[in-house]
Length: 156
Image 1 (cartoon, helix red, strand yellow):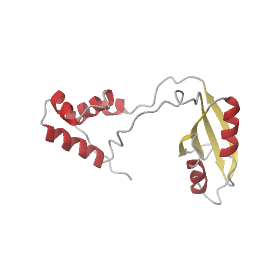
Image 2: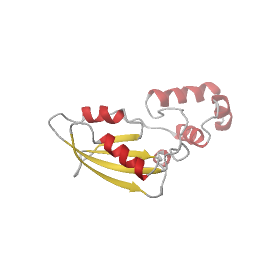
Image 3: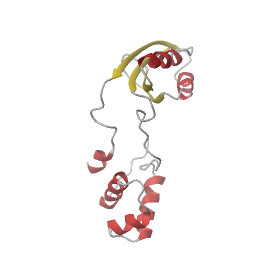
């Protein structure tokens, strides 16, 4: 089981500030939070070390990159070889944004993008080309209603 860490009010305020302004520096964080620069840096380091804060990279929009179609694909996997060979195959496909093993009627679910519906067929064909995938079922996303978010969990 993964270790779970509690966070206090200062951590919450720091995370909210970083989420709102990802390019902000530590010195400015400390000024706005009313704490010493060393305190802000120590808190930031601790959040990174514990895995609460995963990274500082840019958030990219697939639509702005020319990938206007998003879909979710559920894969049924031949159990004999397991999930790992399929996951390794999926990791080599740039249009696969994420993949998760799941419970229910399928074994793995992926979020994928494509440039068009015709391109989506190409991506699906590439996904199912690996031995080990028995069946695939795809659902096209029409509009994003709630953007991926974690900050409300911090507030809770």
